[in-house]
Length: 260
Image (cartoon, helix red, strand yellow):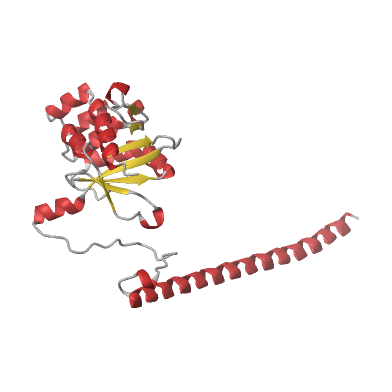
């Protein structure tokens, strides 16, 4: 079903509940971000903040904020106040797109269009948490210059009856920031890929059939070259194995003769 409204409520509840008094004080007094990062401990990077049942409301879904204090430091470094962040993602989330292509990711947009929320596979979630201490240290020290993606919050939700957790990452909607800052409208958007490997496009579903067919031709030719290289490599391996087998047999006979 449409979980946009309930997801927003869950995220908002856990964000409001996670207002840490010490960090809030640092935030309000605009203390240097390095002081906030120094406040973090190793436990902050593995913390899982659950919603108190009294704040759960009617929802039967479970939600946890992963490493909430660490991500809060990131938000402060980029100028996001905790209360406004919670209000933005705590309202109804609007599903966008028809699925994340090959990844199958789900995308949501906050009601004020400030943030994009995307589902994240469990292996990628675990990898991000593993890198989080280094990531926090880098982006908080280089917030104005770094080109790394801006990860502002990480949550996981278990919907009723599913028995599995689904992870969500929150990022800023850069298109909104760009259009407001430059007072322009974006008419077309492109998803650029660094590889054409297995990027087959159905020409009938493409707006440019000739371009789609040219792309598919490159994909198929690349696949053929890859297949040929693999076959040559295997033939070379078998030939070397056969040669070593013959050399080994001859060498063994010579040693035996010498022993006699």
